[in-house]
Length: 248
Picture 1 (tube, rainbow, N blue to C red):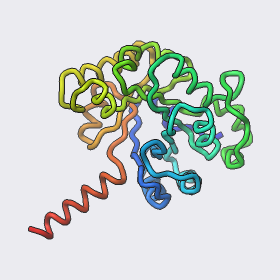
Picture 2 (picture 1 turned 120 degrees about the vertical axis):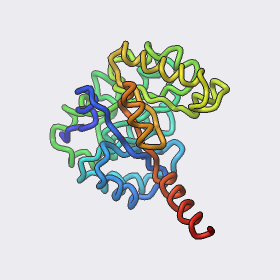
Picture 3 (picture 1 turned 90 degrees about the vertical axis):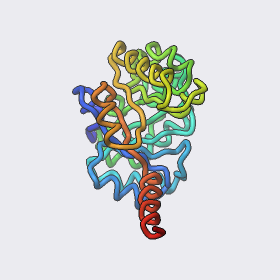
Picture 4 (picture 1 turned 180 degrees about the vertical axis):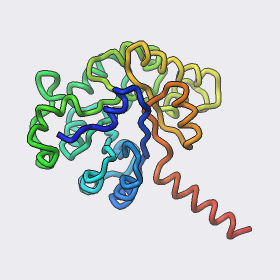
């Protein structure tokens, strides 16, 4: 089976850097995959990825060394099974607030006896004849901690066998806490609490960030699964800067 280079890095204690793709454009996913990021995150929760576009993006990312990761709509075996069958080597599951919900995500992503994932998916033969034997070890499962409740239960959530990463949702977490993201002591304390919980459980923790400077700063603190910007933020930022010059 194709080796999951992101898991390989994380298991070696290294940071993995990704790029968030929300537009639903396979062309953008293809171009971004050739840039050399460790992973691309196709956002099927808040992004615009339909079924056909997701298939095309997986086809475009596949020949590169960039790992395809998908965030699903919710913690549902049907959604998790689908993106894995299409070729994702990692799944990000939103709004995980308890140990039981983390176990549900893991079981959906793993073949028996570790889970309940159904065998199938015609694209998986492209990953090798040993896919089913190796997939449980090569599929990254990240659970999102993005509420006050999840922060309070972070260590028990991240201690679940099969959970590979704790991925913080800073904006939803800020809403849950009643503060502004990255702009209050309470928010920062929650981020650090999840990081410490991950350290205690032996699991890497990460979050989405806007700039490489912020990514490097957080990596120095110990966060190891980080996305640096997105296709839409890059487009709007660049177009806005160009227009500002033109209007001046």
